[in-house]
Length: 441
Image 1 (spheres, rainbow, N blue to C red):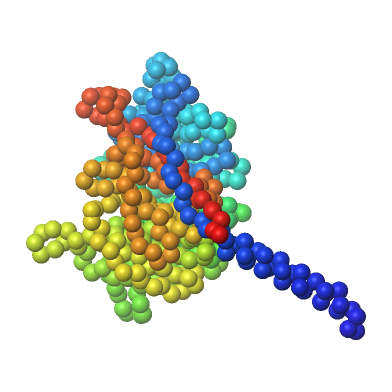
Image 2: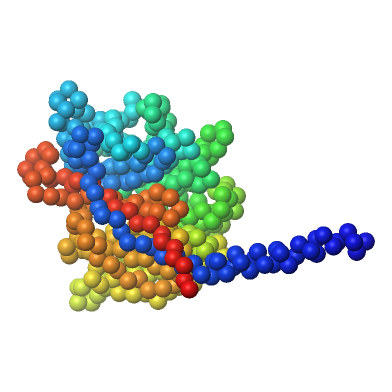
């Protein structure tokens, strides 16, 4: 019997040496965000610029899609990126869906699919085959209300052959579909959508978060109930293909009959969104306003929640703080970090994972310069003023690769008035940042 184990025992020292060697290699490598690339202006193939109001980038193997926020200025202005080719090539502004930049660098305008009417607040998610799944809101209401709440959400794939037939995914009395509320991203290679909903039709008043995921036989819809008004500022992170954490600002319950308004809450799912836990309160903020809630799952397995709280002081001024919480057990428990003053005021946060760091971007309220901060673990938030053109749009981040991010924003320049002198439109600009790993002696 002992002889049978000798070959295995002989391998143990070699295996231990290999493990020690790998550990030593890891211990001598330090990774951190590198410098930002030089910015560039996205243009059409003939050099003409692309105008946007709010860039919403989505990464796919075929290229990058920049789809617009729900503003009519953006649509009217963007069409003039294509005017140089003659009136016959123009896209009716009311039929413009967005602009797509292909992997060869060519950027082209895209018309709405047949059947789409207004196509509000488009979102795009990449598919494995390089095409895009595009989601948007529809509403017969043409007032400003339709730019924040819609009764329907639609979906259609877009690929090399153009649009597939649109499909209505969701109908509710009120769906919080606008530039901020819906979460649309890819989990396990398939698109998921989380969006606030409210049904006001008698006899019931139902509100909550509708979670939609694509399965083999279509779309699965799960309503996550909420207390009070529909939640806002949603954020989703996938710890694994089946373990999900959804954060939101709104009302929740710590125990039956206990309501905590104006708080940050999380719900968890361990079956890919089929069922969800009861809301768990992470933080409360009383009568203050909360903005720009972000949830990031970093490479070390930690979850990081970041948000801004705006409190009106007795003297009428605003006291703003950046607040954070972290979880190292897949959202089961959370530890708050000390709040830091958001002064000078940085607004319109966006956040993404870059290795073990959370990369945070925003813009300074006073001069609209772009601000960026790379946060390591529970480390401090130290803003860096980027030497790019000031942004007239909320800056947005998209993953190019596990170790690389794309930053997009819109900037106005002298003479960039594509439609009327009193209706300027921002040019679309971009820059990248990559994780840099160095050997440490």
